[in-house]
Image 1: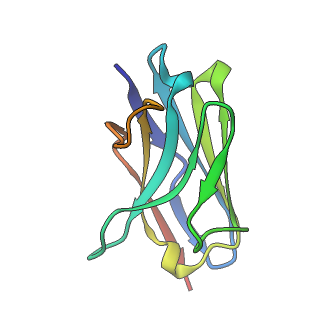
Image 2: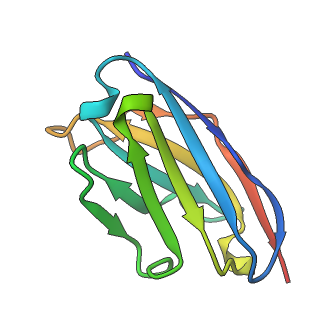
Length: 118
């Protein structure tokens, strides 16, 4: 069983930066794929970025070059560094995890609000 808890959200002006963290419990987390999703009001939840156990990353086109995902397997932690933030990045951000042989993310955090003002 894996439990996830996000932190680091808040209010920032456009062009600013925020760093989100996801702390996980559970011995198997280090072997899981970890992802960050976001959901803006009235929109579907979307996958922003993901990272494998070995550090292979992927990003949505909308955040490439601005966001960076990283993980510390020894500390069961995943981070999302968000730079050059835009008002359209405003959303609730969720940390999620899945075993590498499963396509659906089955473990979710409670979410953290990120608001970017123009």
